[in-house]
Length: 177
Image (tube, rainbow, N blue to C red; front, side, top):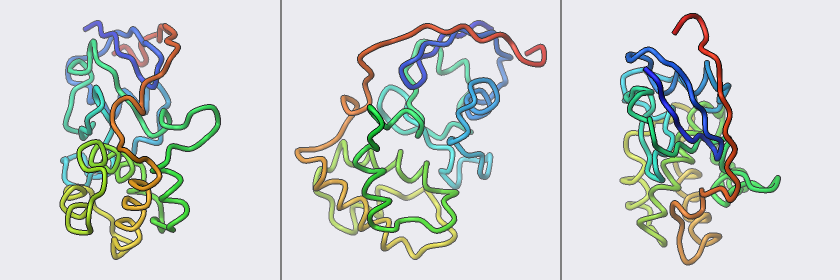
């Protein structure tokens, strides 16, 4: 099937097999390896990306379902060499240990902050449900999300993710897919 998808501000036109998962398309075809393959069942949230500004688990979505949509990965958050405020807050608050869950946590936190500009602890924990971390006790993650909320006043949202210049790139099918 033919798809056209805008990923991190670049439009890609590709032929893909209908069963190709979005996470594999991003990693294997586009080289967006910051989108992590965790459980492949939608339970861990490590593969979280944004589809039209809202978080989705890319291991639970087919690449063909992204046709005509905007996808933002962890690689697409920085602007002009400057980290996104949520990325900065995770770094400043030591909100990671091994880092495996961090991209998905950050993407989910941005979506949370789009709806909740000043979340309390319980709201952050509830908003991050479905994104698992095996290393931390989550307290620094909660602290980082609250710090990011302060950095982003009056709030975050899809506008934070929009790119001003779009480019079109064609990728050749890999492996006959």
